[in-house]
Image (cartoon, rainbow, N blue to C red; front, side, top):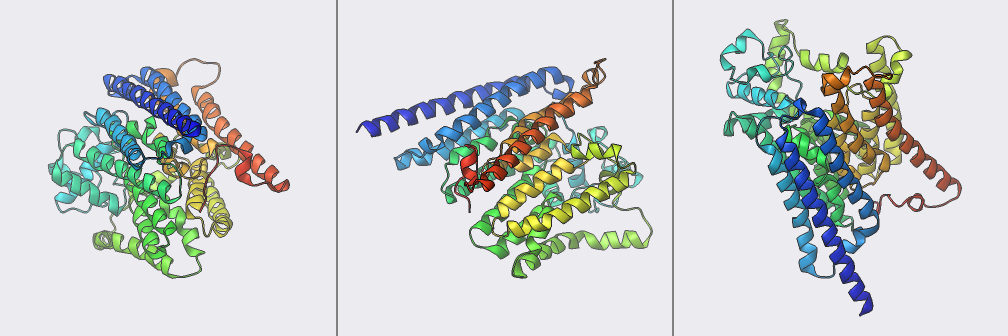
Length: 467
């Protein structure tokens, strides 16, 4: 009886803790809404964002000790926890979804691509500034970034752009579509955790994290479409459905190209079926756009201008890539060197994790982002659903620290006459911390291997119930 009373008190305290975190997080997002659009109030935004990250950090630390307590005895309470997590997540996003984008203006490009498709035009052929598309311009046309470049978004993203534009030409329709996939990701994540025998409370690391709310509900980024499809593919793989899993993974790469990192893992599988499913889905997605592109190629028209510019010219918040600038002078050579290194190292990583696709995906995406010349804050969120399954301090810390990149949005802060340039301070605070934690984690694993100790015993914040 005493043990049961202690469990009841512990669950009661846990419920109160979660409610305090949820209400405080809601208040923080309401404060952010007062400063929209945030790019005009970067200092105020960073102060509120820091407070929200402290709440998220407190939740992460608390979960390491208390997640098992949230597996209550009663079926009713067990069923209520996912609804609490998902309901609060939806409420946070509802606060920021209204109005114009909070910081980034990418959502106007989504609305434009959808508008172009509704006119029966291939979105890969013309840039928004093209004279051929002048009749399609709307009142928000001037808000499209890089209007001189054609679209960089893959086919699945294009179909969602078109579907949202069919519902409404306003950017709210685009934001609503991707918030829908964001909430689906949270729901699937809780299913994934349950299938592994872990508490659904771990999903709060993603569901209540401030950055997804700001970037997906506030700014309307498309990444939840890719994240949901990728998580769904990994879930199917773990449930013993390799063909369906690899097919959905291929679909995720057609929302955003990052899941192409799964290619080495697909290729080292013992059967050829998964590879055929993966590449077959990609081919089917590309096919509807291929005819117009081939005709444009025959006519000698420029194609994929936006994709080429993104791959060869853009440089935003780079990590290890920035260190190579002092060693390799040629920009193209730097990109080729990093791509070759990542591609080479991914093969042994795939072989080592042939039966652990989530671990492979997390490791490859983490390495890709650390080496990428372009690391927007919302890119780091690709890791976050996987971090709910494989807890890793270095990567989780990055999801909080990457918000420092917003410092460079404000020209007053970027050009302040400090003794050390703001970009250098930003790099040290962000990547110095992440890389330091990563080296510490690697060191603990090496030490555990030498002592013949289970890696899970080296730190509290580790993967539990691995597949």
